[in-house]
Picture 1: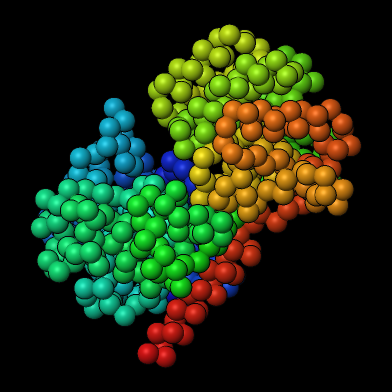
Picture 2: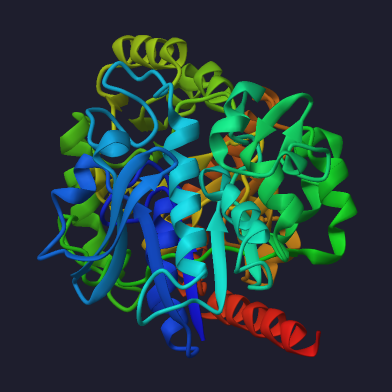
Length: 482
């Protein structure tokens, strides 16, 4: 079974968040189920610099007004398809923003071109590889099913995965004439959304199946609170909606082999974890490591509940804990955390930015990973925490609710608890969760049991990859029956 995956970021070539981890891990996970998955991504500067001996497969003289080439390159045994379009992607900044952190004004064109190229591949543009199914991720790939529906690949099944419905790729109607789509597509049954063009809405409307990255989030987005204006469409397509929880790359995230941490350890040899606690304490200037260290590795935004956490920074110290934060985002939240760190030197540490090695050390050396998100489609941070014995404290929402078993009396007695949940997402509820966590940390046997249960949890892609492979097979069988 041949599947084309279309994504705007793929680890290890380019990453800003969990989408990259998912798109990067799926091909290897699915290969065990007979799925040959190729990944198409944009040729950003950061990506082009990592390609090894790229080979040109097809050239477009006019891909929505620009010249472009699809390259292939094999890196660490994985074959990637890269859309090399210098006019669109050869520029400073990140995948979506410039060096000043402002959105590229032509993002609509950049990702429409990616989708148009994907549709061309579905139509047979590559001489020796045509996909049986096309799998599009988030709004940046949302026009892929739309373009396919209009051309030779109209009957090729498509899957549209929502990683975060809050980001919809909405642009003014003036761009529609430049998309090379029939006027009929600018309608309620197409890409039109309150007079604008919505890439995600178009993909959800025209994909054969819709998936999102946890069962709970699949239900949440059917409500006005979480559906971000698309709940009506999601409900109309509920029979085609599937919630498949994410996994993690168990080779990249393995404390027994991780080269980014101070000392390797495992469930069988947990004592070696102490060297990472010391390394983390030294990094943030915490001194002795007897106090519980609460870690945060996150975008610093309202969605992630960082404003709630910021209110409790002083409380964490007063309760006898320490706080280590890695991330970037809202400047006001960055400033508030910086002020907290200045008030509590030696107890609160902050690193603004993205640092992959440090994120690994924080999972290996922290005691608690805090994820107070207001909504969280799946979340990978808490899964890394489970794998590394960094006990999760999470909001009861989306994939956080699906992946963490709260240490309530019954779960603790049955020795199945893996962390702490709280709800609603308020300072009072989080404060109580912190108190529960600190009480458990003070009982070494209780804490060791939580860590052990977390480290035993299956957070790999094995079960989820089987779900995707089964969904692909169902779509192909349905196609053959029509």
